Image (cartoon, rainbow, N blue to C red):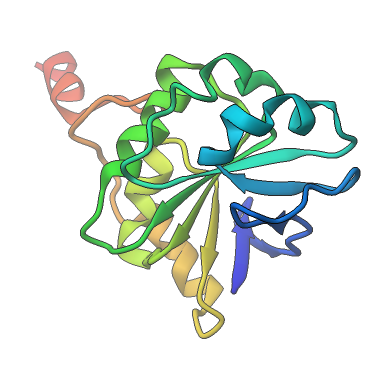
Amino acid sequence: MQLVKGNRRIQDHWVRLDGEAQIPDVGDIIVPITRWPADRSMLLARKGGVGVVIEGGDSLEAIREDLEQITLVVLDFPSFADGRNYSNARLLRERHRYTGELRAVGEVLRDQLFYLARCGIDAYEVRDDCDIDDFLLGLNDFSQVYQATGDDRTPIYRLRARAS
């Protein structure tokens, strides 16, 4: 897989742990959100960044109070048809004011990139056979937007109202 952030491919230094793996004392790690309640103290006390994986049906409640200490939130999109993590991304950015990295993983397609970015997602894990330059063109698929989101772009209906 390739990791794209800031309009370029970057090296991924994060280690993704499953639900049973031992938590190392140092290094940047990613754990499932289901581990957070039981391992919270250990995760926050260690040296290194902590990230959590959110599946579409997961609640953000378990991490809500600790978002300032969570460096990375990984949003899993198991299918292009499963849009639940679009909502979680908007909640994290707009309601909870999360400023860390929001990373989309799973079935992340160029056609979704514009919408993922509008929801506040700023990093994308894509297949190795994906042409990064072509993928990033998806950020500019549309010049106008229909809905307001946390990205501060003015929706077209407001632009039209101002013009009249």
